[in-house]
Image 1 (tube, rainbow, N blue to C red):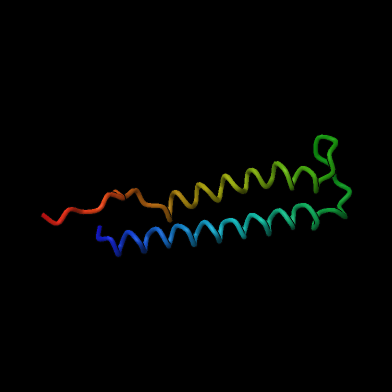
Image 2 (image 1 turned 30 degrees about the vertical axis):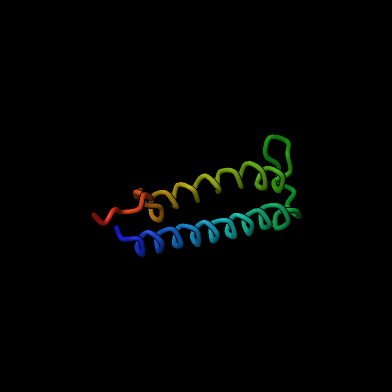
Amino acid sequence: MTEKEKYRQVCREAAATGVALLLLIVFWLFAGFGLAGSSSTIFHLPLWAAASTVGVWIFAIALVWALTKWVFRDMDLEEESHD
């Protein structure tokens, strides 16, 4: 892998991680504020409280799994020697 390809891959991983963070924030906002009017409960907690804590945690794990499966690549970060 050339230095240019490594740089592109690192930029791709950083951009995808930023997108995943934005998705997580949107999910958290929806789970916390979007479900605030619901009268449903889970384990005697309001639905919005359970969704914005445990739901966000599960969604974050799913996002990290997706990033490691489809975006991140194992690569050597050492510079190539041109002997």
